[in-house]
Amino acid sequence: MNQEDMRELWNKSFALGTAFMLAAQPALAQVPEFINYHARLTNSSGLPLNGSQSLVFRIFGVETGGTPIATSGPILAAASQGLVSAKIPAAAAAFASPGTWLEVEVNDETLSPRTQFLSVPYAHRAAQADQAAQASSLSCSDCVGAGNIADGAVTAAKIASASIDSSKMTATSVSPGTYGGPNQFLQLTVDASGRITSIANAVPASPWLLDSQGSLSTSLISYWKLDEASGTRADSVGANDMQIKQYNTPSPGPLASAAGKRGSAAQFAGVNGTPFLQADDTAGLNASGASFTVAAWVYLDQLVFGSALAKYASGFTSEFWLGYNDDVSSQRFQFQIVSEAGTTYSEVNAASFGAPTTGTWYFLVAWFDLAAGRIYIQVNDGPVDSLATSVAITDTVSPLRIGSANGNDILPGRVDEAGFWKRVLTAAERSDLYNGGAGNTYAQ
Image 1: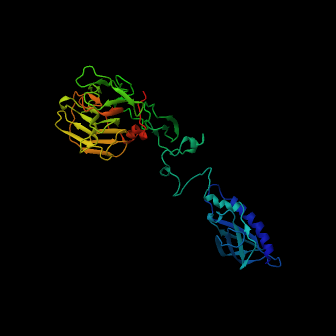
Image 2: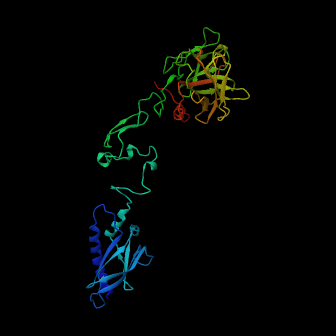
Image 3: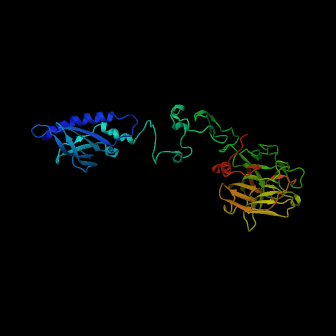
């Protein structure tokens, strides 16, 4: 056999034969892991070979030397008038290198040089797409599914305009219904065929600086921004405006204003007999028979006993109290609920947060969960302290006061952005009110 002739014949017939056989595969069929080999073999005199021929095929990632990526054979192939055919096993992984060469051994004689595979054999790589502009189907353990995509990772900016339309969704891709809203950013409507028929902005306009759940106004009875420089402090939500009061004084003096967490804040003197704020009792401010939440930013000028928000009246006819307790056993922010006669009460300290200091703003949230039978307090969106309670709050005529309890226990410091809800706020809502320490406010 003439090696040079054989190599020349191999170069021609292999390229043509494989090009033809691979092109003939039906569209979208599973990629076969064989390459058809055709050659015309001759002896050293140029005469065609006949009969059984032993063929060995080796695939390399380099033109000379190296270790075979794959080896097949010996394969016995019948030659007739020099023409021989064989199927070379070749998985897609064999064509992952930038360049791939075939080495052929015929009857223990290795032909050289190696022949480089060109574009057609690289069609095997199509079974594994490095980049796919379009794929008819996916079946793999590592495919991207809903569990692999972080919430919020796919945004409109990352989807080309008009790239997803009804023609690219199967009839069963999405179940019929409405998705999202009222607290989500988008609301989708899907028809019976699984097509998205409408997309709408589902976030309602919110009066809050931050309201990620769209629910901070739900069951909100009153909210006092306390931005006024003097006089009455308005209720931004209801009709429970805060009037300036002073214990046993029909004509109270002015109540100072100071820099707040957001805008201005009410400033209290910390001395009994000085002005405070009061909203008369109403059905909305009744804390009995229901869950409720109170919240406010508090700034202490002194570490002495003082009330932030409270419903206390003379004779200890009371409902709840939130403030700073300087008792030696406490020295913490504290929340209490009280029975009508003041005979029983439950109190929980913000022990997890620790002792506050002067000259710092703190965000206090306290709540009573009627169904759970527990009271809770949280400072600066941190750990929550709670206590089981059997105290039954009853409706009283006690006003709701800011900066005082029963007309005394005046807070030595400031209060800002105070609210009263007739429900338990969620952790996300409490975080929105804290707003990373920047504070929130009711814009309307």
